[in-house]
Length: 275
Image 1 (cartoon, one colour):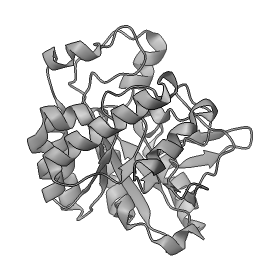
Image 2 (cartoon, one colour):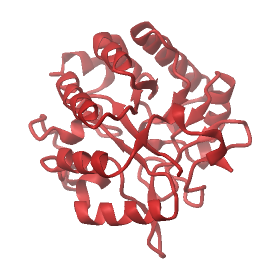
Image 3 (cartoon, one colour):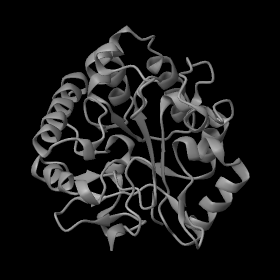
Image 4 (cartoon, helix red, strand yellow):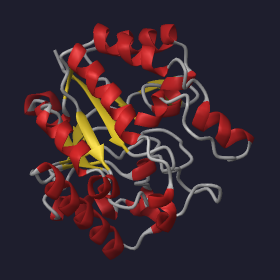
């Protein structure tokens, strides 16, 4: 059976993309940090379920919380890269992107003692106009990417891209997030705000359907997705809904998904499953 992939994007509550109300990069160090407590809660749940997963670590987090990243690695989880400064890829020039990726890898290696071989773009922001980033990742020695969002999305999105793990022409292994085909459009359901929004019964229905077809589930969440007590930013009605809906019940959904399905880190996905 094709294995399922469980991932956590390691960032804090204030790492909100592309909004004037979110603290700017120079202000990050002044914010109340909640990432360690929320991550420790997730680490405990992963240990209870005896699951090892992949943490896509923001380089800034690795620099400011190296002991947290070290604990993640020591617990047997894979440490991959989420870039350094949480910037949208399509807003960066290629060399700026390369510098951001290198700075993140250096910070992660310093904290965890291992250089990451996997990458996920903030906001899944590799689009048609920024596919050059995939070649830079391959050139920088990365073995896989999980930045492709094979549906429409505010930040990024590649409708029509392969919806299941595939090998790219440049040699990278690509792990798109799980989506479901609703005939008129494809939607995500197994990560972030989508995971918080949809009821557990519907999530399990879609996930069981994928497993019946022997399709890999690719789940992602952030530590803030389980934190009902996090500070709230005034993002406007729509972004407030997207950012804060379902926080109270998300941890229980994670519990159910960990118990019902088997999960592995991205590094353990077998080569023969790409056939």
